[in-house]
Length: 148
Image (tube, rainbow, N blue to C red; front, side, top):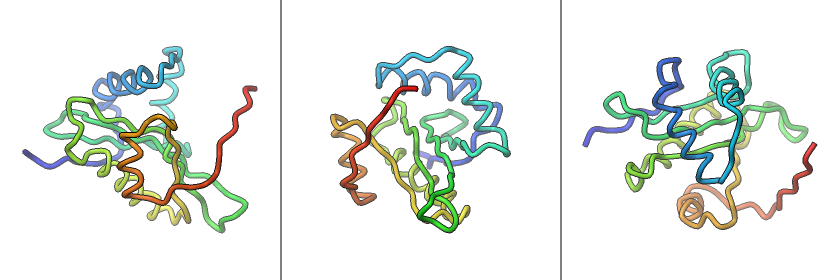
């Protein structure tokens, strides 16, 4: 099996990313307007934006993606990196692709001189947590949300 390439998304990746994005939304039982999906991909390609997208590809096929945001923090001289979305095609799971995507985001965060990489997952997503527990330290923080 050939290795997986982790790289920034390109315009021509949209067709391969779209079913992965939909799979991600389906996993979390979410729907978004098509305009939001279009905006998300456009932002990820815009160098002026803080949203970034990396693709896991093998032989030209998109197998997974990770979206991350570089942002300022009151606790950091440079920035933090928030890994917002991570998804691997179910048919490609168990091959180290999710870990490779996290490593790709880690490298990008280091290149941006971020002081921290962090992410959240659903409390019931035990499969993801097994991987995350190997790669990072679990925080004791609890997330709260207020719709606006």
